[in-house]
Amino acid sequence: MREITFLEAIREAMTQEMERDSRVFLIGEDIGEYGGAFQVSYGMLEKFGHERILDTPITELGLTGAAVGAALIGMRPIAEIMFMDFTTLASEQLVNQAAKLRFMFGGQSSVPMVLRTPAGSGTGAAEHHSQSFENWFVHVPGLKVVMPTTPYDVKGLLISSIRDNNPVVFIEHKLLYKTKGEVPEEMYEIPLGKADIKREGKDLTIIATGIMVQKSLAAAEELIKEGIDIEVLDPRTLRPLDTESIVKSVKKTGKVLIVHEAVKTGGFGGELAGVIAESEAFGYLEAPIIRLAGREVPIPYNRDLEKAAVPQIEDIVEKARELATLKV
Image 1 (cartoon, rainbow, N blue to C red):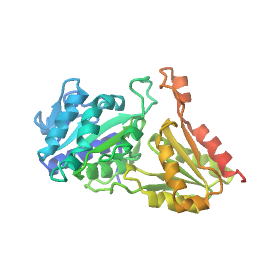
Image 2 (cartoon, rainbow, N blue to C red):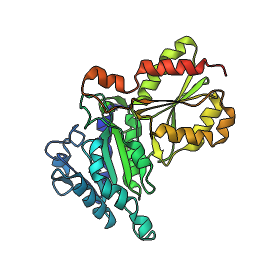
Image 3 (tube, helix red, strand yellow):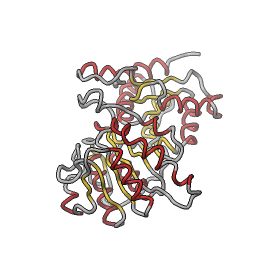
Image 4 (cartoon, helix red, strand yellow):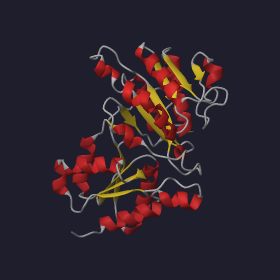
Protein backbone atom coordinates (compact mmCIF):
# COMPACT_ATOMS: atom_id res chain seq x y z
CA MET A 1 0.00 0.00 0.00
CA ARG A 2 1.19 3.55 -0.75
CA GLU A 3 2.50 5.80 2.01
CA ILE A 4 1.43 9.42 2.38
CA THR A 5 1.82 12.00 5.12
CA PHE A 6 -0.67 12.82 7.86
CA LEU A 7 -1.17 16.20 6.16
CA GLU A 8 -1.84 14.61 2.76
CA ALA A 9 -4.32 12.18 4.31
CA ILE A 10 -6.32 15.12 5.72
CA ARG A 11 -6.31 16.89 2.36
CA GLU A 12 -7.36 13.69 0.58
CA ALA A 13 -10.22 13.09 3.02
CA MET A 14 -11.55 16.63 2.53
CA THR A 15 -11.12 16.47 -1.24
CA GLN A 16 -12.88 13.12 -1.58
CA GLU A 17 -15.77 14.22 0.63
CA MET A 18 -16.16 17.47 -1.30
CA GLU A 19 -16.23 15.52 -4.55
CA ARG A 20 -18.82 13.13 -3.12
CA ASP A 21 -21.09 15.65 -1.42
CA SER A 22 -21.71 19.15 -2.78
CA ARG A 23 -22.82 20.31 0.68
CA VAL A 24 -19.28 20.02 2.05
CA PHE A 25 -17.17 23.18 1.95
CA LEU A 26 -14.06 24.55 3.69
CA ILE A 27 -14.00 27.87 5.54
CA GLY A 28 -11.15 29.56 7.41
CA GLU A 29 -8.31 32.05 7.40
CA ASP A 30 -5.70 31.84 4.60
CA ILE A 31 -6.98 28.43 3.47
CA GLY A 32 -7.41 29.40 -0.18
CA GLU A 33 -4.52 30.91 -2.16
CA TYR A 34 -2.12 30.45 0.75
CA GLY A 35 -3.21 26.84 1.35
CA GLY A 36 -3.58 27.13 5.11
CA ALA A 37 -1.06 27.88 7.85
CA PHE A 38 0.40 24.38 7.46
CA GLN A 39 -0.47 23.94 3.74
CA VAL A 40 -3.15 21.36 4.50
CA SER A 41 -5.57 22.78 1.92
CA TYR A 42 -2.89 23.64 -0.67
CA GLY A 43 -4.28 23.22 -4.22
CA MET A 44 -7.90 22.84 -3.14
CA LEU A 45 -8.87 26.36 -4.25
CA GLU A 46 -7.87 25.56 -7.83
CA LYS A 47 -9.97 22.41 -7.72
CA PHE A 48 -13.13 23.70 -6.02
CA GLY A 49 -13.10 27.47 -6.47
CA HIS A 50 -13.94 30.36 -4.16
CA GLU A 51 -17.53 29.22 -3.58
CA ARG A 52 -16.40 26.13 -1.67
CA ILE A 53 -13.01 27.24 -0.35
CA LEU A 54 -13.92 30.34 1.63
CA ASP A 55 -11.15 32.61 2.90
CA THR A 56 -12.39 34.73 5.79
CA PRO A 57 -11.20 37.84 7.63
CA ILE A 58 -9.30 37.27 10.88
CA THR A 59 -12.35 36.47 12.98
CA GLU A 60 -12.52 33.02 14.53
CA LEU A 61 -15.85 33.86 16.15
CA GLY A 62 -17.28 35.02 12.83
CA LEU A 63 -16.13 32.08 10.71
CA THR A 64 -17.30 29.57 13.32
CA GLY A 65 -20.66 31.30 13.51
CA ALA A 66 -20.93 31.15 9.71
CA ALA A 67 -20.20 27.42 9.84
CA VAL A 68 -22.86 26.88 12.52
CA GLY A 69 -25.43 28.78 10.48
CA ALA A 70 -24.56 26.90 7.30
CA ALA A 71 -24.82 23.56 9.10
CA LEU A 72 -28.26 24.49 10.44
CA ILE A 73 -29.60 24.94 6.90
CA GLY A 74 -28.23 21.66 5.59
CA MET A 75 -24.64 22.31 4.58
CA ARG A 76 -21.66 20.35 5.97
CA PRO A 77 -18.92 22.90 6.67
CA ILE A 78 -15.33 22.18 7.64
CA ALA A 79 -14.11 25.19 9.62
CA GLU A 80 -10.37 25.54 10.11
CA ILE A 81 -9.06 27.44 13.12
CA MET A 82 -5.43 28.25 12.34
CA PHE A 83 -4.15 27.33 15.82
CA MET A 84 -6.04 25.64 18.63
CA ASP A 85 -5.16 28.56 20.88
CA PHE A 86 -7.64 30.62 18.85
CA THR A 87 -10.55 28.30 19.59
CA THR A 88 -10.83 30.46 22.70
CA LEU A 89 -12.16 33.16 20.37
CA ALA A 90 -14.53 30.72 18.61
CA SER A 91 -15.87 29.17 21.81
CA GLU A 92 -19.07 31.20 22.09
CA GLN A 93 -20.36 29.85 18.78
CA LEU A 94 -18.93 26.38 19.29
CA VAL A 95 -19.81 25.81 22.95
CA ASN A 96 -22.93 27.93 23.44
CA GLN A 97 -24.49 27.44 20.00
CA ALA A 98 -23.27 24.45 17.99
CA ALA A 99 -23.21 22.06 20.96
CA LYS A 100 -26.66 23.06 22.22
CA LEU A 101 -28.91 23.81 19.24
CA ARG A 102 -30.03 20.25 18.58
CA PHE A 103 -31.13 19.98 22.22
CA MET A 104 -32.75 23.42 22.24
CA PHE A 105 -34.79 22.55 19.14
CA GLY A 106 -35.87 19.18 20.48
CA GLY A 107 -33.96 17.25 17.83
CA GLN A 108 -35.68 19.02 14.94
CA SER A 109 -32.36 20.34 13.63
CA SER A 110 -28.72 19.32 13.77
CA VAL A 111 -25.34 20.99 13.35
CA PRO A 112 -23.23 18.71 11.10
CA MET A 113 -19.97 20.65 11.11
CA VAL A 114 -16.31 19.86 11.73
CA LEU A 115 -13.96 22.32 13.38
CA ARG A 116 -10.39 21.33 12.45
CA THR A 117 -7.49 22.81 14.37
CA PRO A 118 -3.74 22.15 14.82
CA ALA A 119 -2.63 21.88 18.44
CA GLY A 120 0.40 21.26 20.60
CA SER A 121 3.98 22.37 21.00
CA GLY A 122 7.26 21.43 19.33
CA THR A 123 7.50 24.05 16.58
CA GLY A 124 8.91 26.95 18.62
CA ALA A 125 5.67 28.89 18.26
CA ALA A 126 5.57 30.00 21.92
CA GLU A 127 2.74 30.62 24.34
CA HIS A 128 -0.04 31.73 21.98
CA HIS A 129 0.37 29.08 19.29
CA SER A 130 1.29 25.87 21.15
CA GLN A 131 -1.47 24.95 23.58
CA SER A 132 -3.54 21.79 24.04
CA PHE A 133 -7.17 22.51 24.93
CA GLU A 134 -8.79 19.19 24.04
CA ASN A 135 -10.28 18.65 27.49
CA TRP A 136 -12.01 22.03 27.39
CA PHE A 137 -14.23 20.64 24.65
CA VAL A 138 -14.51 17.12 26.06
CA HIS A 139 -16.30 18.83 28.96
CA VAL A 140 -19.10 20.11 26.69
CA PRO A 141 -22.15 17.87 26.10
CA GLY A 142 -23.16 17.99 22.44
CA LEU A 143 -19.63 18.12 21.04
CA LYS A 144 -17.62 15.19 19.76
CA VAL A 145 -13.84 15.41 20.13
CA VAL A 146 -11.46 13.49 17.85
CA MET A 147 -7.67 13.34 18.17
CA PRO A 148 -6.07 11.06 15.52
CA THR A 149 -2.39 10.10 15.52
CA THR A 150 -1.63 8.24 12.27
CA PRO A 151 -2.20 9.02 8.56
CA TYR A 152 -4.52 6.00 8.27
CA ASP A 153 -6.58 7.06 11.27
CA VAL A 154 -6.78 10.73 10.35
CA LYS A 155 -8.32 10.04 6.94
CA GLY A 156 -10.89 7.54 8.19
CA LEU A 157 -11.81 9.58 11.24
CA LEU A 158 -12.11 12.84 9.29
CA ILE A 159 -14.45 11.24 6.76
CA SER A 160 -16.57 9.89 9.62
CA SER A 161 -16.56 13.30 11.29
CA ILE A 162 -17.69 15.09 8.12
CA ARG A 163 -20.54 12.61 7.73
CA ASP A 164 -21.58 12.84 11.39
CA ASN A 165 -24.69 14.88 12.18
CA ASN A 166 -23.11 16.44 15.28
CA PRO A 167 -20.47 19.17 15.69
CA VAL A 168 -17.01 17.60 15.86
CA VAL A 169 -13.81 19.22 17.17
CA PHE A 170 -11.05 17.57 15.14
CA ILE A 171 -7.60 18.07 16.69
CA GLU A 172 -4.40 17.65 14.65
CA HIS A 173 -1.04 17.78 16.42
CA LYS A 174 1.36 19.92 14.37
CA LEU A 175 4.29 17.52 14.73
CA LEU A 176 2.24 14.74 13.10
CA TYR A 177 1.69 16.58 9.79
CA LYS A 178 4.91 15.27 8.21
CA THR A 179 4.70 11.72 9.57
CA LYS A 180 4.07 9.00 6.98
CA GLY A 181 1.99 5.85 6.95
CA GLU A 182 0.00 3.49 4.76
CA VAL A 183 -3.32 4.95 3.62
CA PRO A 184 -5.76 3.44 1.07
CA GLU A 185 -6.67 5.65 -1.89
CA GLU A 186 -10.36 4.78 -1.62
CA MET A 187 -12.68 6.38 0.93
CA TYR A 188 -13.21 4.58 4.23
CA GLU A 189 -14.64 5.41 7.63
CA ILE A 190 -13.30 4.71 11.11
CA PRO A 191 -16.17 4.82 13.63
CA LEU A 192 -16.03 7.59 16.19
CA GLY A 193 -15.78 6.22 19.71
CA LYS A 194 -13.52 3.26 18.90
CA ALA A 195 -10.03 3.10 20.43
CA ASP A 196 -7.06 1.33 18.85
CA ILE A 197 -4.34 -0.78 20.39
CA LYS A 198 -1.23 0.56 18.69
CA ARG A 199 1.01 -2.00 20.38
CA GLU A 200 0.12 -5.20 22.25
CA GLY A 201 1.83 -5.80 25.60
CA LYS A 202 1.36 -7.53 28.95
CA ASP A 203 3.19 -5.62 31.70
CA LEU A 204 1.73 -2.13 31.56
CA THR A 205 -0.88 -0.17 29.60
CA ILE A 206 0.05 3.30 28.37
CA ILE A 207 -2.99 5.33 27.32
CA ALA A 208 -1.72 8.25 25.24
CA THR A 209 -3.18 10.96 23.01
CA GLY A 210 -1.83 13.05 20.15
CA ILE A 211 1.93 13.08 19.58
CA MET A 212 2.33 11.20 22.88
CA VAL A 213 1.15 8.03 21.14
CA GLN A 214 4.23 8.10 18.90
CA LYS A 215 6.48 8.94 21.85
CA SER A 216 4.96 6.12 23.89
CA LEU A 217 5.56 3.65 21.07
CA ALA A 218 9.18 4.75 20.92
CA ALA A 219 9.44 4.35 24.71
CA ALA A 220 7.94 0.86 24.46
CA GLU A 221 10.63 -0.15 21.97
CA GLU A 222 13.28 0.99 24.45
CA LEU A 223 11.71 -0.83 27.37
CA ILE A 224 11.26 -4.15 25.58
CA LYS A 225 15.07 -4.33 25.55
CA GLU A 226 14.82 -4.50 29.34
CA GLY A 227 12.13 -7.15 29.22
CA ILE A 228 9.27 -4.73 29.97
CA ASP A 229 6.39 -5.33 27.56
CA ILE A 230 4.22 -2.22 27.08
CA GLU A 231 0.73 -2.04 25.60
CA VAL A 232 -0.05 1.32 23.96
CA LEU A 233 -3.70 2.30 23.63
CA ASP A 234 -4.80 5.27 21.53
CA PRO A 235 -8.37 6.42 22.34
CA ARG A 236 -8.53 8.28 18.97
CA THR A 237 -11.89 9.73 19.99
CA LEU A 238 -12.00 11.48 23.36
CA ARG A 239 -15.74 12.02 23.25
CA PRO A 240 -17.39 9.56 22.83
CA LEU A 241 -14.80 7.48 24.68
CA ASP A 242 -14.29 3.77 24.14
CA THR A 243 -14.36 2.75 27.80
CA GLU A 244 -14.74 -0.93 26.93
CA SER A 245 -11.32 -1.13 25.24
CA ILE A 246 -9.68 0.83 28.05
CA VAL A 247 -11.12 -1.42 30.75
CA LYS A 248 -10.15 -4.56 28.84
CA SER A 249 -6.53 -3.41 28.44
CA VAL A 250 -6.14 -2.35 32.09
CA LYS A 251 -7.61 -5.65 33.30
CA LYS A 252 -5.07 -7.44 31.12
CA THR A 253 -1.95 -5.61 32.35
CA GLY A 254 -2.95 -4.50 35.86
CA LYS A 255 -1.01 -1.24 35.57
CA VAL A 256 -1.71 1.97 33.67
CA LEU A 257 0.25 5.10 32.76
CA ILE A 258 -1.68 7.97 31.15
CA VAL A 259 0.36 10.33 28.95
CA HIS A 260 -0.80 13.60 27.38
CA GLU A 261 0.75 16.92 26.45
CA ALA A 262 -1.78 19.22 28.10
CA VAL A 263 -1.12 20.18 31.71
CA LYS A 264 -2.15 17.64 34.34
CA THR A 265 -4.62 19.89 36.19
CA GLY A 266 -8.01 19.46 34.53
CA GLY A 267 -6.46 17.38 31.75
CA PHE A 268 -7.94 14.37 29.97
CA GLY A 269 -5.81 12.06 32.12
CA GLY A 270 -8.03 12.83 35.09
CA GLU A 271 -11.09 11.73 33.12
CA LEU A 272 -9.38 8.50 32.09
CA ALA A 273 -8.29 7.81 35.66
CA GLY A 274 -11.86 8.35 36.84
CA VAL A 275 -13.27 6.01 34.21
CA ILE A 276 -10.82 3.28 35.24
CA ALA A 277 -11.40 3.82 38.98
CA GLU A 278 -15.17 3.53 38.54
CA SER A 279 -14.98 0.38 36.39
CA GLU A 280 -14.38 -3.29 37.05
CA ALA A 281 -10.75 -2.68 36.00
CA PHE A 282 -10.14 -1.07 39.40
CA GLY A 283 -10.10 -4.46 41.08
CA TYR A 284 -7.38 -5.63 38.70
CA LEU A 285 -4.97 -2.75 39.41
CA GLU A 286 -1.66 -3.80 40.90
CA ALA A 287 -0.43 -0.22 41.37
CA PRO A 288 -1.80 3.34 41.45
CA ILE A 289 -2.93 4.98 38.20
CA ILE A 290 -0.13 7.35 37.16
CA ARG A 291 -0.47 10.46 34.96
CA LEU A 292 2.42 12.00 33.02
CA ALA A 293 1.49 15.37 31.54
CA GLY A 294 2.72 18.84 30.63
CA ARG A 295 4.18 21.10 33.28
CA GLU A 296 1.96 23.75 34.85
CA VAL A 297 3.46 26.58 32.78
CA PRO A 298 2.67 28.37 29.51
CA ILE A 299 4.64 26.84 26.62
CA PRO A 300 8.01 28.70 26.44
CA TYR A 301 9.55 30.04 23.22
CA ASN A 302 13.06 28.81 24.08
CA ARG A 303 13.44 25.40 22.44
CA ASP A 304 15.10 23.72 25.43
CA LEU A 305 12.46 25.04 27.80
CA GLU A 306 9.69 24.12 25.35
CA LYS A 307 10.95 20.54 25.27
CA ALA A 308 11.16 20.47 29.06
CA ALA A 309 7.57 21.67 29.39
CA VAL A 310 5.99 18.53 27.91
CA PRO A 311 6.72 14.79 28.28
CA GLN A 312 9.52 13.41 26.08
CA ILE A 313 10.41 9.81 25.22
CA GLU A 314 12.93 9.59 28.04
CA ASP A 315 10.33 10.81 30.55
CA ILE A 316 7.89 8.13 29.44
CA VAL A 317 10.60 5.47 29.61
CA GLU A 318 11.52 6.50 33.15
CA LYS A 319 7.94 6.67 34.43
CA ALA A 320 6.87 3.44 32.72
CA ARG A 321 9.91 1.58 34.03
CA GLU A 322 9.23 2.82 37.54
CA LEU A 323 5.59 1.75 37.36
CA ALA A 324 6.19 -1.60 35.66
CA THR A 325 8.73 -2.66 38.30
CA LEU A 326 6.74 -1.29 41.25
CA LYS A 327 5.80 -3.90 43.85
CA VAL A 328 2.77 -2.98 45.97
